[in-house]
Image 1 (cartoon, rainbow, N blue to C red):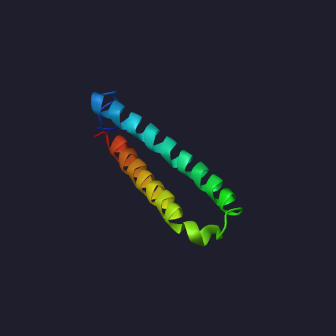
Image 2 (tube, rainbow, N blue to C red):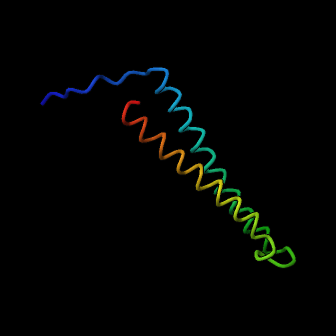
Image 3 (cartoon, rainbow, N blue to C red):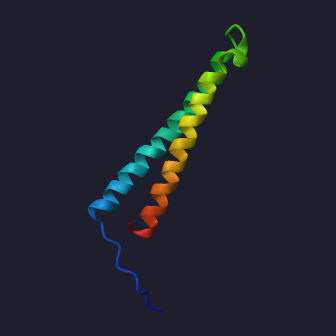
Length: 81
């Protein structure tokens, strides 16, 4: 079977998508690391996690944003846009 798709080419748009995916992936991994460090650090703080909920909310917000951005770039990269 032959495919009517164009051959894979590294256009400027595909390169920029690949770089954006790499950066988003690094942000996701770094945010997970930050979450683990934060959760370990709050054990020793007065008031515990309940006193610092806003920091946790910020970490989760950045994680969700980066994950959605990574997903959007991945789909566009696969589509060849």
